[in-house]
Image 1: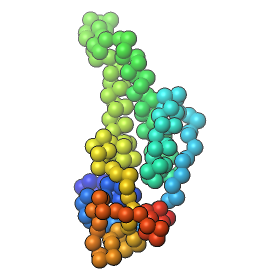
Image 2 (image 1 turned 60 degrees about the vertical axis):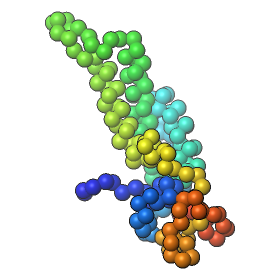
Image 3 (image 1 turned 180 degrees about the horizontal axis):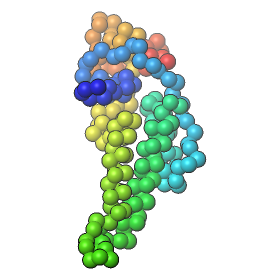
Image 4 (image 1 turned 135 degrees about the horizontal axis):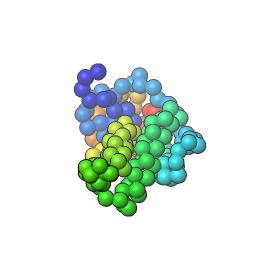
Length: 172
């Protein structure tokens, strides 16, 4: 598959559909829910799960289907925290018994976990670059792919919430 990965429709709506491309009306829309935290996560990962799960649920982008992706992100976060704690007490370059200098293995682990966190964060919509584009005021969309009565896509600042056209009904 070439090009950028497609973003979930819910995130496009929250961002105000910046690309102005038609929204996918046939995208599966799982019911928003907070999945249970996996027992195998380390303590730092469980704390991150508790911190993120409710926020993602409130945005409407978390369902039971996202449990593995969120768990992978949280576990990477937990391992990164552990590696950073170990690095705090040791130098970044260590001298081996043979006399050669080598990068601390904890630095390698921390770097790899940061890469994994970044990958999962983009999949879950958690990247810092996406945060300024998110808006909590999202409504006024109808079932014709996010257009108003005249066939225009409203700008993010033009959204008005009505009982008939709420985003919650659009995504059920």
